[in-house]
Image (cartoon, rainbow, N blue to C red; front, side, top):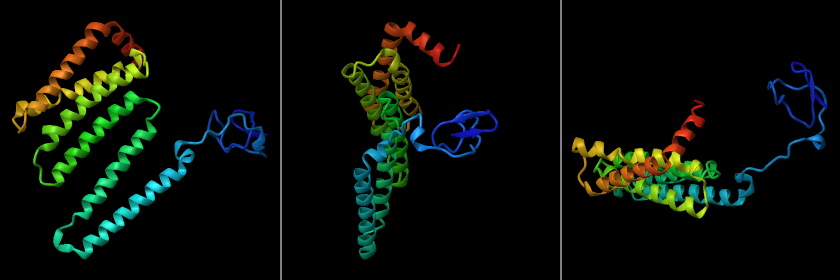
Amino acid sequence: MKTCEKCRLQVAGNRQFCPLCQAELTGEGDPEQEAFPKIPTVYRQHTLFFRVLLFCSIAGGVVALALNFMLPQSGWWSLFVLLGLGCTWASLAIAVRKRGNIPKNLLYQVVLISLLAALWDWVTGWRGWSIDYVVPLVCICAMVAMSVLARVLRLRIQDYMIYLCIDAVFGIVPIVFFLTGVLRVVYPALICVAGSLISLAALLVFEGQNMLLELKKRLHL
C-alpha cells in the first residue's frame, strides 16, 4: 500500500496523491486494492458517437473552407460555418456537463444561446434580431420547458425553483431594451416580461416560504 508522509496513513490502490492533503504518495501500490471504482465519463461511454461527431464537424469545416477558397467571389461564408460549429460544440459541452441537473442545464443554455445570438447579430451587422426575437423566445421556452419537465420527471419544487426564479428574472431583462427604445419588435419582449412576472408571482404566492427556506439553506444563513 502507498503511504502519505504528511497524514501518516496508508492508502489502498494505486493513487498518485493523498485524498486528504493531495500530497504525493510513496511506496508501491496495488490497482486491485482500489477502494473506489473508476466510473467512466459520458465521453468514454459514448466515445464512438463523439468521435464521429467530431470527425463530421472537422470534415464539414474543411469542405466549407475548400469551397470558399474555390469560390472567393461569394464572400467568406465559411467563417460562419466554422462559428456555427463552434457554437454547437459549446452548447453540447454544457448539455453534457450539466446533464445531471436539468434545471441548471436549461438556465446555462439560456445564457449561452442569448450571448451567442447577440454575438452573431453583431458579427452580421447588428440588425437587432437577437434582442427582438431570440432572447425573449429562449426565456419563454426555458420557463415552459422547466415547468413541463418538473411535472414529467416529478422533480421537487426545491430542486428547480431557484433556477426557474433566475430564468424569470433574466426574462425581465428585455424590458430594459424596451425602455431604452432599442427594440424594433416589441411583442416578443412584452410577452416574455409578462410571462416572467407571472412566473415570479406564482412562485412568491404559492412557494414563498419554500423559496425563503431554500435561499437560507443555499446561502448558509
